[in-house]
Image (tube, rainbow, N blue to C red; front, top):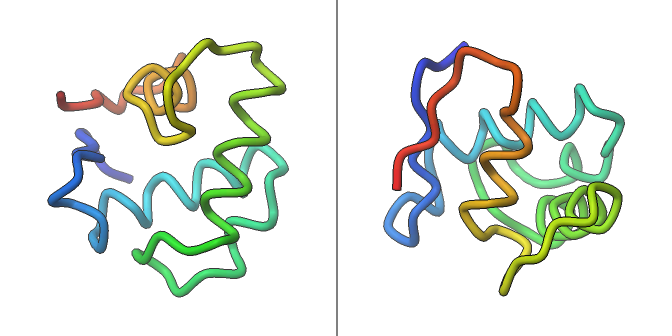
Length: 81
């Protein structure tokens, strides 16, 4: 597992995205598994939006840093700005 996740706009096809997908799947958002590992597609976006709504997180977009930080809450993974 990763020690840090960089989910900024330049990391849209990366190991960080794969870590986000894995975490979403672990949390029951299986649609994240419909995308190619490491690529953000419709499944990953839908899973992030569902997670955001489930947690009641106020964010501009579903892949906002607040959403990603909440996704990795209570883990050893640090979300990089």
